[in-house]
Image 1 (spheres, rainbow, N blue to C red):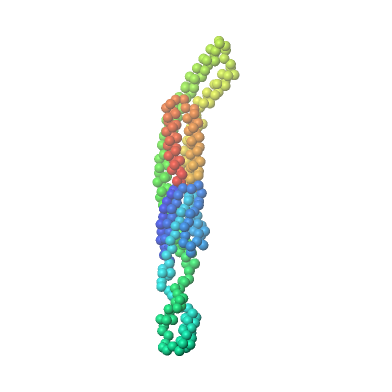
Image 2: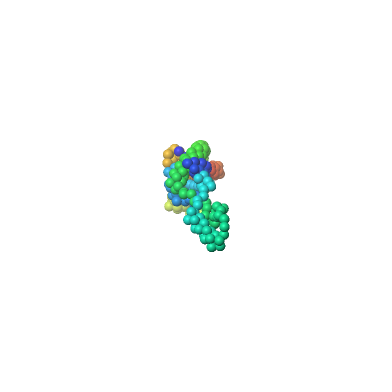
Length: 294
């Protein structure tokens, strides 16, 4: 099954007081690499997120952004420094007694001391964060994988259509290829005429044999045509494989291009040359699509 390397997913997962929002974008890349942006408290779990993503994806640059909301941290929690409060109260009593001041010491006076009542530092539950992140990453990886498969199906249909187009175009190439020997035969006769007319001397049989062999080789594209059809068959087989196909298809495109270049260099007429140009143009469109395949 073909999977696209370009995709997008956004998921949200809640666990107790935690809510994790994760956005994942995937782009083309020759290998699997990550760009991860995490809140500081989540950074210890970066490698675990990569490992989960790697279970579903083998190629592509994956960008992950995480936002963590902990509702327990939003509660108005305070704590009292009893030791400091007592010390401050005793200090006030000492001042009162020393100066013979009357009256009691009000609660507001004690509370007015700095750092007697302070905001509490809530404990961070790392295990809860780990669990929430893991569940969110797995859900995001699955969602991204579904989108990659969906996009891959579109790529499959397009590639199947284009490779069939190349197969059809090859029929015209084969027809035109049958005219190549006649073209080169005419060229050989012209060369023979030149060789036998120079200064009235007889032509060199060794040179004639060389020219004949060279032109015969240039006029034969049957091997290239056979290889092209073999590549078409393999291209379709690779598209139906379950494993990642991007690298294999890219290699086959290089092989297609090599055969088309050879046929073009042996073309004996403009019609065949134009047919090869059309083939290479269609192959380039296929190459662009293959770059998106995992």
